[in-house]
Length: 335
Ligand code: G4F
Picture 1 (cartoon, rainbow, N blue to C red):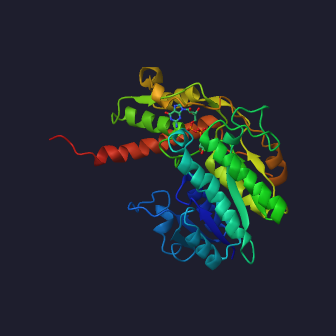
Picture 2 (tube, protein in one colour):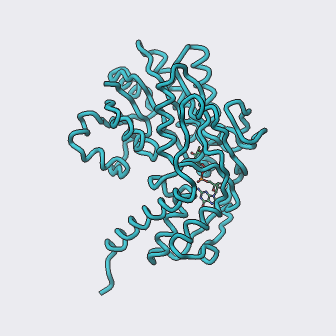
Picture 3 (spheres, helix red, strand yellow):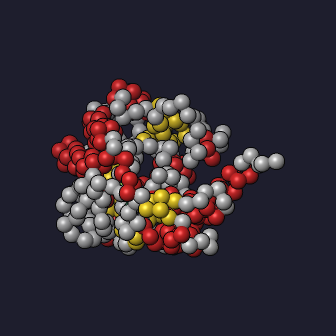
C-alpha cells in the first residue's frame, strides 16, 4: 500500500485528491491547520466513513510555518509521495496580506523541501504551481518554457516556490514536479473566487435569498478547467519515470462575463440587471490573458481535460441551487 501526505487536504483540490488516492488503495495523511472551527465540509463524506477514517485516511495538525511539527510528522509517516497543495490561494487577497502569502506559499514550500532533503528515503513531491507566475506573459499560449513575469504578490510567491522546486530537483536529485495549473473550478470551489461567487449568486438570487452581486473586472480572461481533471494529472505526474514540470490547462479562453451569461441564463435571469461593478474589487494588477499550452502534459501523461466549459458552469449552478434550497428550508419563517 502506498502512503501519501496531502497538504491542503481540506481545499477543493485536496478533497478530490484524497478521494482519488483512497480509490487507488493509498493510505492518505492529510495535513490541516488547527482552528477553532472543526467543520471540514469537503471531507465530511470521507471522515464519516468509519472504514476509511483513521483506517486509511488520517488527519494531522500541521502548519508549514511550524517546521518542527511538519518534520516530525513526515519522518514518522515516511510517505512515498507528498502532494503539496497548501498555501494562501487568493490572488486578490495577496495584495492585502503579502507577507503571509509569501510566508505560506514561498517559504512554506522551501521549508518542506528542506525537510525532504533530510529524509532517509526521500518521498516524491508534487507542488502545485500557478499560471500567475506568467503574470504579463511574453508569449501566448504559455508553456513550461515561458519566462516568469509575475505581477501580483501571489504570483511572485508561486514563482519563488516553483523555481525552488526546480533547484532541488536539479541540484539534489529530488523527484519533484511542479504542476503549473491554470484556473480550475468545481462545485467545491471556495466562495470568494469569481466563478463560485457567480454560480452561488445566480442560485441564491433565483431563490430570493439575495438581491444582487458585486464584482470587479468582468472583462478578465482566464483558461478555466475542471478541478478533478487537474487532480488526476497530479497523481499521474508522480507515477511518471522522470520528474518534470507540466502546464495543466484547457487551451481555451473565456471571460468572467461568459460565466455571468451562462450561469444566470441557466436560472432564467438577466445578469445585467443584477450585477454591480465595484471598484474596490478591481485588483491593483491583474493578468489580462492567461492561456495555457498543455500539449506536453497531454503527450507525456496521456492526459486531457474532460469537461467542457458550459457544462461545468451549469453543473456548479445546479450544485449551488441544491445548497440554496437547503438554506431556504433552514431559514426561520415569519409567522
Ligand atoms: O477567481 P479569481 O479570484 O481567480 P485567479 O485570480 O485567476 O486565481 C485563481 O487561479 C490561479 C491560477 O490557477 C490560482 F493560482 C489561484 O490560486 C486561484 O485559484 O479571479 C479570476 C478573474 C480575475 O481577473 C479577477 O480580477 O476574475 C476577476 N474578478 C472580477 N470580479 C474577480 C471578481 N475575482 C474575484 N475573486 N472576485 C470578484 O469579485
